[in-house]
Length: 405
Image 1 (cartoon, rainbow, N blue to C red):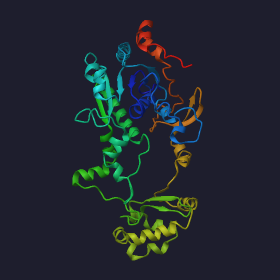
Image 2 (image 1 turned 135 degrees about the vertical axis):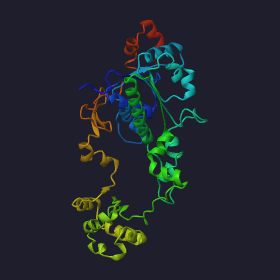
Image 3 (image 1 turned 90 degrees about the vertical axis):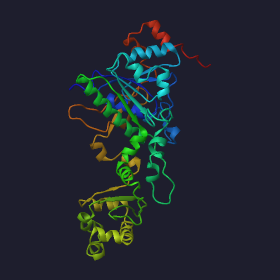
Image 4 (image 1 turned 60 degrees about the vertical axis):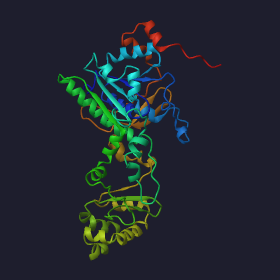
C-alpha cells in the first residue's frame, strides 16, 4: 500500500533530539525528509558510545541513527548568503518546514513562518522550543533537562522523600515532544488536503513536561497543591508499591484496585492467613495499617530471588512487573513481539538493532532498516532537484575545507 505521507516533502533545520525525532517519525510514515546540517555535522552525530561511558567500539552514534533514519543530508553554512538562498529554494518545494531554531535566529535568516508563508500560505511550519514562541523566554536556549524536567516540577516530583532530585536520562522529554509535533503536522496536512491553508505548529518542552505529568499537574492546578510524594515504607496502598527481592532486585506491584486483587496476591505470596486478618480486610483498613502490612510484604518478598518470584507470580492473574535493567529490557520477548525493535543496515557499521516507531499500522509497515545519512552525502542531489544550477550549487556549498597535513 502507498505510505501515508508519500509525496510529502519535509525540510528539517534542526539539531539534537526533539525536532529530528519528529522528522524520523514523519519519514517512517513515508515523507521525504531533508536534514539541513552545519558543514562539520552537529555534536549529536559524533557522540559515539564511548563518549557516554560505554566500553564499546561501535563507530556511530546509535541515538543519532535512531532519530535520523532514512533522511537525506544537506550541509549548508547559513551565515553565507548563497547557502541561505539555496535553502529557500529547497523550502519553495517543501510541504513542511521543521525546525528548533530560536525565533530571533529564524528571523535573522528569513526562516520565520511569516517570511516563509508570505507567498506560500500552504506551507506548514512546525517549530520546537523550550518555552514557546511568545513571552520573555521565547529566545532562551533549552534542553529537555531544563524546560521539560527541572522547570515543570517533574524533577522534584520524581524522587522519594529525603533524597536529592533525580537526573533525567537523555532525550526523554524530546521523544515525548516529537509525538506532539507529528500529531500537529498530520492535523495540519489534513486541513490543507481539505482545501485549507497551511499552519504554524508550535510545541514547547515546558508544556509537554506539564502534560506528561498531567495527573499530578491537574491536581496542582485545581487545588494549588501537589500530591504528596510516594513513601515506600508507608504507601497509601501497599499493593501499589515496589519491593526488594533477596538478590537485591525489585518487583513493582500495581494493584490499584486493591480489594479485587488482595486475596489473589496473598495466595500468590503464600500468605493466605494474611487475607483473613480483619485489620487488612479492606482498602481503608490496609491504608490505616499500611506501615505494618508493607513491612510484612517486604519481608516475604525479600525471602526469594527475582527469578523465583517471576515464576511464582506468573501463575496468577496479577498486575505487576519485574524492575528490569535496560540490558534486560531490550532483550524482552514481549517487547520484540510488540514490534519495538528493528534492525538497521549501515554502510560502514554493519547491521545493528535500534528502536522502531512507537505505533503499528495494519496498512503500512513503519519498521525501517534505513540508516541515518552520511554527512552532506545528498547535498548536490538535493540542490539539483530543487532547481539550482551547477554554479549555484557550488556557491551554496562553498569551498571545500582545507585538508590537514
